[in-house]
Length: 340
Image (cartoon, rainbow, N blue to C red; front, top):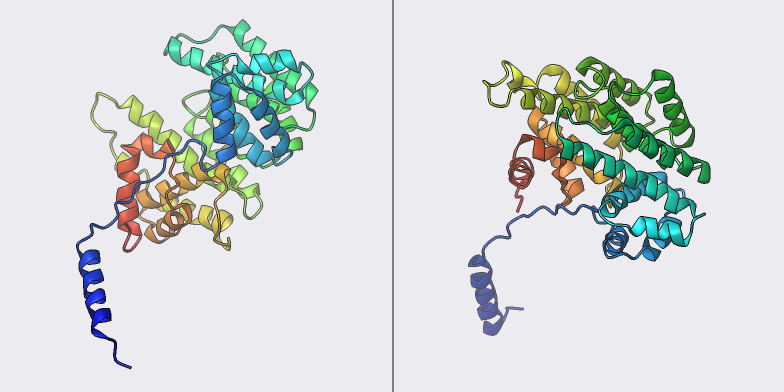
């Protein structure tokens, strides 16, 4: 049956309207909560002095340790500039979650003090000791929770000269008894052993590669090698600021080992994964791998990662190599066919 004239006129009109429409411009979403809407609400409550929603959120999170780590980390940053967590503790002094969040918040506060003091300023040792005691108190109140030990491993690098090896090993062992593949804890120890803090590039890479090699299939820990590569880049780039570019550093991302390690991380972590929603706590690490794949020239891997991420971008690590939004949009356009 031939289409009638009205249908043909309608089709031509629709085509003209579509043809004249500008293509959609792709804009990544730098959502600090990475799509965790319940967390967004709780963080907003924290800022205005309401702690009940935070309590309920952490109770509902239960022992989903990766999600709990993500939520406590971001809640602690929201709490650092207010007294809301102290108000919660005063109202419910025996609430383990209040103690865990307050310990994490104290860690953020001492890091803020260190940043304000600038290079060479440091934080008073007694202040650090008080923070450590808050973390140990939280660990006693919530024995199964890995978060107080993540907090301890984070604050450790603020001690001048670091903490004793036996103490650091004890904190590390306690963490691993509770959550042996906790990505945030591994990142904090990697930074502790970096040249920026209390180690060298070699010790940092050794730690990252050992952890990647022992991780079970599907664990995000292989991406520690890409995190280490970013940390080395930051250290060298900051040291070269105001001077000539570091000789040979243009190959940092694309020499043979760097490319091989991008492929290994993909195979150990992502290979065989069913495409589906990305968990909020995975977004930063997926961005690390996408960043590494782009700069290594592994465009097929980058394309699949951008497809997996969609618009879910994170400032880190893109911010260390330029404007995050410009890079994310540009590399996505290079690697994803017909990207808009």
